[in-house]
Length: 103
Image (cartoon, rainbow, N blue to C red):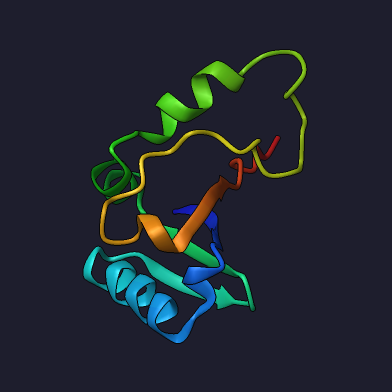
């Protein structure tokens, strides 16, 4: 399961924006696991994430797999992730949580 956070734009924090994003997530089989005033925590499969945001998880991770990120526990840096037109005005950015590696 891929976990990520959506930071809502000012417009996205409105009732209309929140409703639009929530409907978009539900229609695309993305589970909303928590919500705050300006953020939404989400979970979905890597396959669905790739279909919705036009980028696979490995595509996003590949440039970040270097010495500086090994062992990092914080979310990955803000990357340019494709935002579909229906939610583009409502989302500022998406932050992906890196996978936990168990030894």
